[in-house]
Image (tube, each protein chain N blue to C red):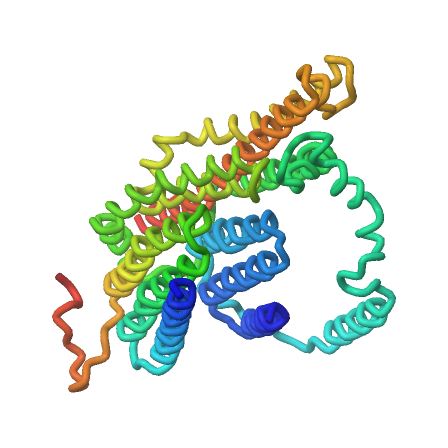
Length: 112
Length: 340
């Protein structure tokens, strides 16, 4: 009973993680400018990875493997948003301007 | 099911390889190379070759990409298109490829049990590695003990590569290079460096990276890992420090002179262990004379030899980065002098 519940739960995690990965990929291809694309990629980095790792931890059961997976998850939760932040910051420092809906090229984020 | 994973990975590999051929932006090329390495690492992992997968991920996707990026700060961002008629080259490539495909017909079947590779020395290693040495990770036993002269050669190759980079980049830059940098590169770098989030996270992550490097260095007998991977991971931690806190701060931690000495000391340690075997009455790189108990002797030899490899690899990777990163500053100094 518990076994099958865990199986179902783990597959739900894995599949939703995969769906988020696909959504992130579509966003990466279809969004108009750098920052929105980064937003899409950021979702893949955090939510998708988190869900897939959670699913894998349930699959692995209690043990050394699941502990290692949990550690990987912990590191991903630190490094992936940092990488996204570093990318966005580097783009801003380099003067990449976000595309605005009203077409004006005057974001206040350029220099501050 | 496993076939599906293999097929997907191989298809992605081919796709990425095509993309690398077509892309003219060198930054994108470097990133695609990293993806290619990660995919091959995944393929190796799917084939249960943990050590090779770890090496490919650490060297191909990790340090090689970092070094590519370091080199690209010195070069133009876009590849110059090749001019002229390349029909002759195309003919040579097609002829060679046709020969290779023809020759591939004579290769034994992939993974067949009676392949020469399966019946030569491999059965001996598989049957006797554990009884000979008591080392659970057979790859470490083969690499560091059965085939330790090959590995010594590899360590020397890395040292030679380090020396070559040092020799090439020790010549001071003379003439002005064509402009390759954006307008505010200097201030941009400073602003990235003053970014608090990066500094805090780097401070948290770097010790973990170094700890992980030590883990795969000294746990290499039991699980995938060893000197090559560990050295690269350790160097990557130092390079991350240099990227966030600046090369000067990083060179204060491990000065250039120390890097030279370490690069040579690693290989010397390897050779010394080998000679110790001779002095104690065995052959070169024979570990059995080192200690009374044969298993303990083999394990000591393997650990020390792997440590030598790790030290050389780490020091050489740091040397590469130091020289490429400093080159940019030297070129900028030359340009500033010319501007005056």
